Each structure stands twice: as C-alpha cells, then as structure tokens.
Length: 143
Image 1 (cartoon, rainbow, N blue to C red):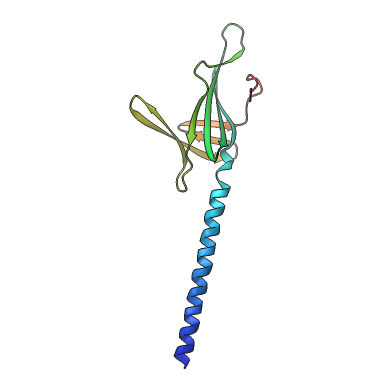
Image 2 (image 1 turned 90 degrees about the horizontal axis):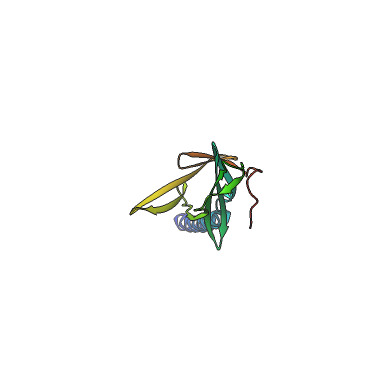
C-alpha cells in the first residue's frame, strides 16, 4: 500500500513540475519576444573632425532598422549639409544569443557589423563609438 501511495505522489509531483516548467518557459519566451532590444532605439552620433555620422535605430512592422546618415561641414559657409548618398537603411538583426548586427553586401562580400551597447549612452557599432542623442547644430529632421 505504501509503495502505491508513494508512486501516486511521485506521479503527481512529476506532473506538477512539468506543468510549472512549461508555463515558466512559455512566459519567458513571450516576455523575450515582447521586450525586444528597445534600449538601442533612438539617435546615435559620432564626430570626426568636420563630419558627423548619425544612426537612427527604430522599429517598424515588427522589424528593427538602422538608418545611417552623414553630415559634412561646408568649407565655404560653415553650414552642415547632408551627404549625397544618405540615408542608407539596413535591417538590424537582434538574435536571442549574441550581439545585434546589420549585414550589407559590397563587391560580392557580406559585411556584418555588430552593435554592442557599452553603457546607456555609448554604443559600439563596428569599431566606432557612438554617443546617444543628436547634436543641435545639425539640420532639422524632416520626419
């Protein structure tokens, strides 16, 4: 009788643990998908002498994008002007494990650029450090 009772408790215990683990895993996966990597969203910039590189990271239709623009200071009138080839928009991939990255094909080679959040206001994109925000002296955004 005791072995039958112990077997019943063991069955109920195993069933309960499996039930809880399935619910916990489902909840974890749901929160992971819902949370995303919103800490990268916003404007980021890097300054090189007379050039400012700007990244805008945003989400649209369930996907993340990184929009790239460059601004150069005019030699003649010292105004900041947007580069001719701007903007360039790339899909920002956010894997569950590892760093976020973009991919770009150039001369039959795929170039992968990682996005690593160093702290709340510093983002490493490839080998370049970007700061959060947008310099006030750049032309206004037409969005």
